[in-house]
Length: 263
Length: 278
Image (cartoon, rainbow over all chains, first blue to last red; front, side):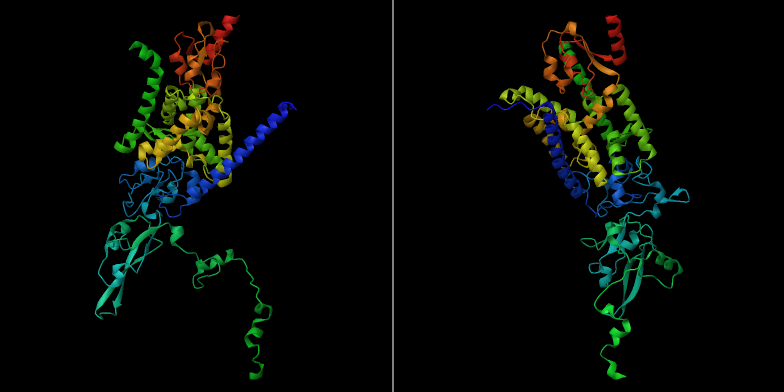
């Protein structure tokens, strides 16, 4: 039996359905790829970069910051680098940020992914307030913590004596030497990476991590009660009630339960 | 020599433009030239005029990014140029992928791949508009510029300026796809940027114009045209090529031995037609 040819309306609807079906398949594959390809949290951005999520949608990947950098610090992620493709980053161990006072990489950004206002103090560009990451010390592999004298990172730091300080403690093993331990001051450190580059150990014992990765967060439930400013954070705290079998009874009861004979 | 020039004059000009732009961009990164800095996503001309990819900006809007003033000015410059003057000229005069797909297309003709039997194109050229819409939907849902993270155009262009990495794989993929899988596959079917410029340049002034009275129906133009559906009037009617999908590559003009195709300005073309008919 010969079938009737499909009506135009039916053809149109079927073609639209095919298109929609293909678009759904493509859309899922595409989204999955993008989700994986942009999920790189261990990446150091140029100074003034806005937070990573906004950065990924705002950076247009033009490379003007890379061209502006006089030290070839900044790179654009290539296929194979396993970083969000085309976005600027730097590897501190290879070439750190040398913290130019005029910050040439930031004002050239056409999209505001590098935010001039975040590296400006009193209307003047100020690289010392940049926040590219935070230096972290692995005191297990840092030879200064072993008692061997080394202050390479301390000397390399562009904010000498501010972002990295030296803590003197007694070396009990010898009884007559001092440990001179480097300590990072998180509020001052800009994450430029000059310490990481200067570190003398085979794999650096001091290294830069994005601040989001390097830092913990106490949350609103722990307050420095002796600090008036810090106490203000209590306003954000909301109440959480935890229910367990014990909490059904009053605190007094649960503590003294079964001890009635003592009185 | 004169015929060589005559048959390839626009191709030569296009290659000079494409490669010249790449050299200028490359020089900006390698030797600090300030003529043309950045790349096709966003650049700075003569250290002063910003130029930005309007399609990238559309994805940014969809993703929810705030657009900076510099970017908006750059987008306006590019949009106005292609919308009013160039049409889809970006694709054949600027885009570096064009050299790859032209090469694939040329080899396809030399190897006579189209005579292997598979005549009908298995995919619709409207696919690019679906990809264009899809890129904006994904940008919106994922909060990220969806095409910019997979675009082989930017990958190759960035690669040439800033270091290629595995970008050669993208170049080879497109070449092989266009050569063996689908004729004009990337530029003519899939690329959403091409789709975007097809829509943007629909009403631009520079048009290829067909003069039916000169046409000898040799159909050389249809053999070389990468968007052959735009030449539907060949041998039938004297009309300008009005489809936005025409890339103004001018291959049809230079292969025509009978002066049946030429560049014209849209308005003048229409006026001439009116005076001829009245």
